[in-house]
Image (cartoon, rainbow, N blue to C red):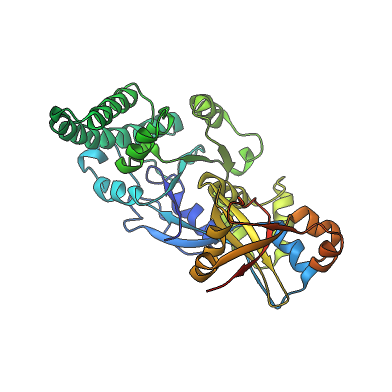
Length: 366
């Protein structure tokens, strides 16, 4: 299953407009709450200048960049954890994603209604945080009751699990998301993975601003950044309306000119996509030949056989070794043959941890 990033936020903050720009799809973007009832799903190409450079050097018949799955999830309102609005549906959908792109509205526009009647991204974030936390506490308290019964038998491991669950409950009740809970043992790590807590998911904050605030922000974004300063989460400023206009342009040069006129160096969606990729703890390696230059997505810290298995399970089962060229080395020498002649190709075995940007060729036998 591909890893997914889910776009969340209150109704009418620009989630669907951002989704459309990210995917060049046409999800319903309307000026009323709950325009999105079923989650829209799209595959987005990860912008990476490295695959462009490799393609220029190799001149393959085909180029295949890497992608990430993005989900536009229904808007949430206060009381969602008790089923208000589309709360139950929202929470079920968010549980299925691996990371969260939390969109907050940081622009004033009387023509676009806000579900709570005024613009306050700090309040909006706290509403969603509260609803996710309440749902997590509900699930944690159920697990706590089960562990209280199972630990009565004297099982030390169950007692440690109970202690951890109670510590997480106290952490969340203190106003902190589960992702900031300090894990100190393998048992705690395994338990956290089992719990599927909503507030444990990594988060990227996207402040949706007007076109005059894209570069330097505004009072709303300043207040929001101050609020999340201790979360160690990335905050990106974009104008979903501008990104929608850019997405409508078909000519690449036109897009670049439009972006330049806005005082930007690239479309904001590029930064969002790359940040999603990082948020999901993904890296890219490449295969490069005359038929195809292709980017492959793997989790950080994946070893060579696991990376080979992304291409085909037989590659992993029968893995013998990997021929590896660092991206910078490949570009420096200009071709695989030149790298080999210079003695710069690495021969790696099963324990090799693949690095972001590696250009790889696998030898296998099945």
